[in-house]
Amino acid sequence: MPKYKPFRSLFTAYFVVITGITVIVFIFFGLHIIDRFFSYYVDKVHEETQHMLIMQVAMHYKMYGSWNSYDGSETGAAAKLSGDYFTITDRNGNTIYTSEKGV
Image (cartoon, rainbow, N blue to C red; front, side, top):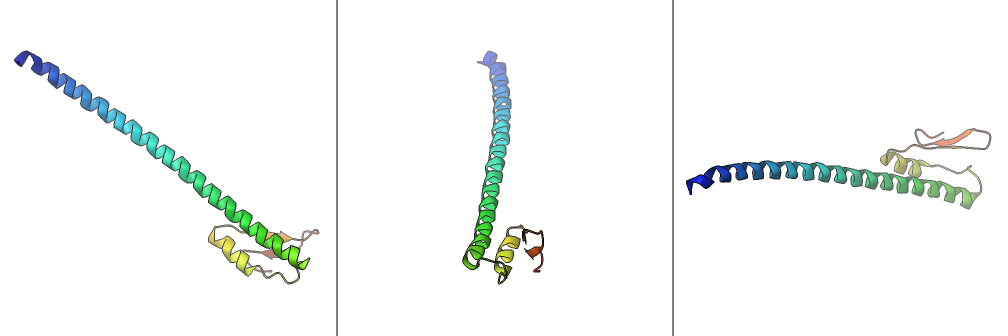
């Protein structure tokens, strides 16, 4: 029995090292994959929020046919919550509304 003891110690040491390296590799790749999926999720939510804001502004113009009565404070507040700012200009480049401050 004593002649197998060095083999057991060596096997145990290799097993611990290989298992440790494997765990570290899986943790690294797992964190990387989670980070990529979270970034994708955040980008999709941001994209959907921008689309919703554009639809709200377009709906106002479609309903009224002009920007004369456009307040924009509700849409601007929603934009600020998501970290977005937008500016509406007419065909001549005159600012009609900006969410940074009402014009």
